[in-house]
Image 1: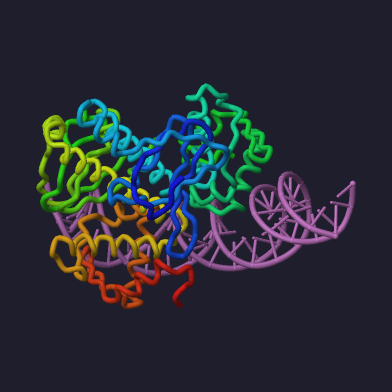
Image 2: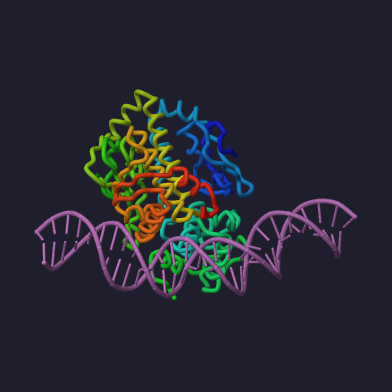
Length: 193
Length: 193
DNA sequence: CGAACTGTTGAGCGGACTCAAGGTAGGTGG
DNA sequence: CCACCTACCTTGAGTCCGCTCAACAGTTCG
């Protein structure tokens, strides 16, 4: 889609499929900063310095709607509500990021994974898809990078959830069996046995 | 300054002093999401849903410039470059947040603290203040929340840095003695003895 | 002075990481 | 079709970093 350093030209709305955004640390590790699903918009990272700060690639067969910023900008000049709407979109990205910050700081592996699964579940539901049967387009490695864990830990926690009958895991196909248990995990510092 | 849930009316530019933004988790813990120093702008979190998602308070005697969004918006309608500039400001906030995400995910306590100190150092330097003698307006607890650590760990790492002669620490007054050592710490996975 | 708060320091524990081995699936070429 | 390779995932054993619990020191303020 675009790469770190490319000149900023457009923002993108995911039409179908999914996108991951990531950057490469000084030590060469890939750091995933976000996953984007249909209806979600990405690419704002390029606005501040007129070049993209991250790399965005498709995780599966994906179609996006490219929205040239130039046009959007002109349109915004004539229709103020467009400008306003854009700003809200960006602000929403900030809120999403800061929720992730809160998640990364001071939550256990189980809580992190639980949050991610529920988030994906909710977002899939917004598209009218099942909120219990979900398909993870990203690899375990990408999940671990996003959540600040290792692949092994992600794998182990998924196994643990399965043993607890919270989930049924088949490769990238997940069925949420006990959504409340996952929610409880997030909202309590107590270990639920 | 403003509280979580307050209707969104304005953004703020720090004139002098410093600001912290935080939210309260479901379990009652305070999660710091950002520190803002002179020249920096905060308050965008309220834009998306027309009420602030976080609470912002001053860490010391602080003066801010309140910029009513209504006025800014009208101004933007007549002067497109204002709109553009605003969008850049928000985009910059996104980049800042995502750098924090990268920091929180997969960095050691030493790397996190090192990054924060260097960041504050750089930002203080932008105001023409010394980049080596810095004053931390926030408490250890606020630092630990921001970095996803505990107070004890923050204290210990500061002690460690002092023993290594990277820093001289006197309560909230920090002198950076070996900036390169701190930078090296961030950029290497290797333990530097 | 004593209370409350913040910060420092120590001992011990445990969760996530590291290292290592093995399993599974998809792709390629013989 | 099978052998082989590669990439991804899972599982196990052991280690270590950061957390927890706890005691104590320094400050502020009544």
